[in-house]
Image (tube, rainbow, N blue to C red):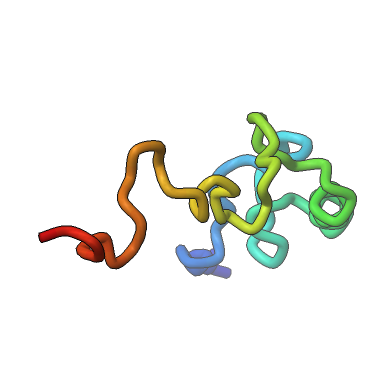
Length: 82
């Protein structure tokens, strides 16, 4: 009996990011459903985060944007000038 050649698109490539075992095609990029669930739990429990300084103004607007810079002329600054 001749051996069948495996479908190249279904050959596991790489390592599982959780445990380091070879990946399984059906669970890519993980090796098993267990490791996929461990990763999902980390995402849902905020286990993954980018280190950095917290933004105090979370809406992205600058709190000082409404205040004009010192020495600035008010809007419609042509009033009273000749």
